[in-house]
Length: 335
Ligand SMILES: Cc1cc2nc3c(=O)[nH]c(=O)nc-3n(C[C@H](O)[C@H](O)[C@H](O)COP(=O)(O)OP(=O)(O)OC[C@H]3O[C@@H](n4cnc5c(N)ncnc54)[C@H](O)[C@@H]3O)c2cc1C
Image (tube, rainbow, N blue to C red; front, side, top):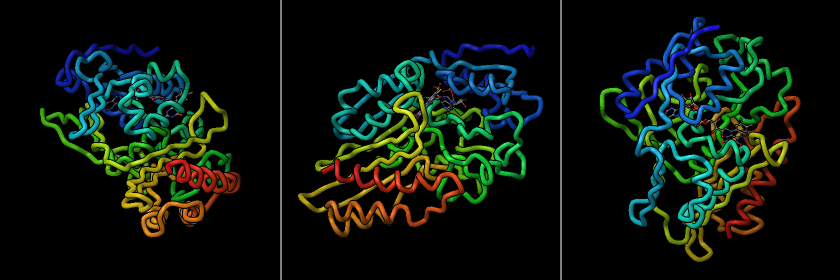
């Protein structure tokens, strides 16, 4: 059995010094060489148990002080430290009252035990749960192979949009809500500086680079998730449909953020998870709500339009109907 060393980081700088790879890079190497970071450790441990990674060193960032605070300011907005657990987010009264869809997305993720361990940073950077990707016996497109085995295989949980090169879906359902809220990630870079990346710039689609799902480079550590201040009249709602009510990732999920002025919808954000390899915005559907206002009729029209690009595989056509239903329902529940 391979020996793995453990480093207990007490600061971000120390963690950066000890790390030389991301999980995607360790997975890419046959030897598995590399020092990777872990936070809650759920996905890191799963990937190790699946024999997909065998890092030399694990750098534990879970106990770095200052990464586990939730701060809310009416002018500055919300700042969630990268080590804040999903359970902490779930129990924040500020988040529930100002960012309901974010609260709902974490409350519906995984199970209470998992939410106690899962950190927001690790959640956003977890790897896809496609069963071909997770199988050591399948050298799929995401693992340097040339084939997406799901295309003509067991594809019932897979992407229905943009599924041409790889049909896996992004595992984080919290990302769906954060995309609709136009969140930004604060990232510490190895040169001792930091940068901000908007949520929609964080994801890497497989047709750009199939070996990873996000832009993180070795030594880059998410330090916080920032959400813009709550604007008066803003309403949000999130719905996740899974195969089971608990202990499962989303088959389909949707987050809606509407900025209302009376009956007029000034701004609409609709994001979909588990529809495509990365979370996506349904911009045509958003335009329907801003042009026509929010009603049962416009909700139905928006839901239809969000699925116009759907191109389901042999076994996942049922997801189109689920998306139409949850998009319509979520819009209706915001008003
Ligand atoms: C049965 C089951 C069901 C689940 N259902 C859902 C669900 O419905 N929705 C959902 O969203 N999630 C779900 N999850 C995922 C879970 O909630 C965790 O969020 C996730 O597995 C990883 O969180 P973690 O903190 O343990 O990350 P870790 O395993 O510690 O890390 C995951 C990845 O992130 C990297 N990383 C960790 N922290 C940082 C950081 N600060 N900066 C940069 N990179 C970092 C690590 O290097 C690693 O690559 C489920 C998990 C299980 C096992």
